[in-house]
Amino acid sequence: MDSATVNPHYLDHVMVSAGRGAVEASEDIVSGSGQKLLAKGAKLDEATRERLLQHKLAKPLEDCLLVEGGLASDRFGPVAAALLDDYPLLLALCGGEPAVPLALTRLRLSAPLQSLLSVYADCGADRLRHAVGVALMARALARRLLGGDIEAQRRLALAGLVHDVGDLYIDPIYLRSDTPLQAEQWKHIVTHPLVGQRVLHRMDGAGPALAELVLSHHERLDGFGYPRGLAGEQFGIEAQVLAAAEWLMGLLESGSSIVAHASVATRLIPGEFGPALLETLRAAGRASDASGHLADEHRSLEAALPQALRVSELLQRFREIRPQLRERLSEGSSELRSMLALCGQRIDQLQQSFSSAGLDLHGPEHVLRLLARSDPEVQQEVLALVREFAWRLRELERASLMRAGLMGPEDLTLVQALIEAVRGAALQPAET
Image (cartoon, rainbow, N blue to C red; front, side, top):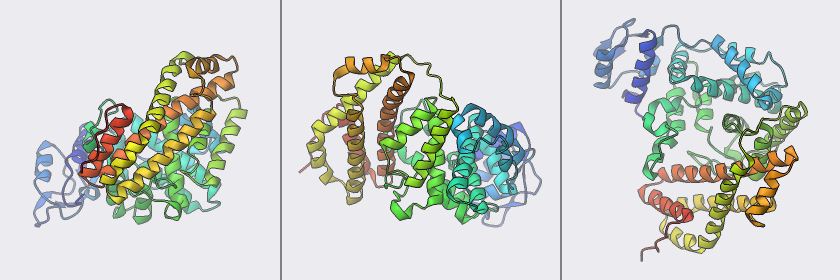
């Protein structure tokens, strides 16, 4: 993203904020050629929008805007308190302290950062709730894992608030949950950590360290994250904390069992985060469980059966066509082959866990008997397993497409063909 060029999607979001309250220039907005496009204090309107899109700017637009009555840090407190009421696991990670939200209200936001967050929050109430949740989670994990490093706690809380601001620069059609994306469109999604990093790197009140955390919030310790595929020592503990916070908040927002889902997820893919972080999550899970805060399960038990059978079918098909998949891999780049080797390891892990749980060894009647058992803990565990397997397979597909989207069109096309083969389409032989 060229910071001198005004991103039309970001500007569209700014105009939404302008429609709800005044957005003005915090300083003269000047083109790269020295032409004054908007004077300090001038309000943004549709005419201004068109003028800004026609020019490259001498200074990034994000640094030159002020949202009057925008998002102040005191707004975080009530949102954080509501999240702690809704999610016992989050409360347990915060040490059961209702006063924890006050820490977010004390964060100091520079004018550009406050305006950027205001525009982001105006995209929808769920955006602010998610951002505050990740900030709470990140700060809570940092307190447990980084000792008394107050600056790291502050930095991670702030990174949690801004981790998804890169979404403002992506065509909203790609972010809609009800819109199926084609292979080539995933590359738009994978750019949001990169864009967020570029915006925040030189912004007053943010800076390189914060931007680097935002860049890494979808990475994983085993190298299967994106956009850089960091692994091992490349993925530092602060970056792990933010990535784990974002991941956990996604689990909580999915509406499934809080304790069981997090516990199952960390057992299925143990290599995503370091052992100290995983043990912290397990301890918090036990604490929230001991408090009697198990999530209510409103879905019928039988509804999980088709999902379990679908997962079993996909895993079985993967085993059957694996030799053909290896043959096709010869067409891909070395980077793609390394990435798909990680995919294979992930699927092997899921297969072993699926079988060890007894979900594919004895047919649907056995699964139904498991789900129908009167013991609520067994029901909860099986439901969590079924949902987690299905979610993990979807995430595997999504991550593969996004990583391949950064490699090149040929690699992306090949990954799409392999995914379709696992779904059941015929796999064409490699070209000779």
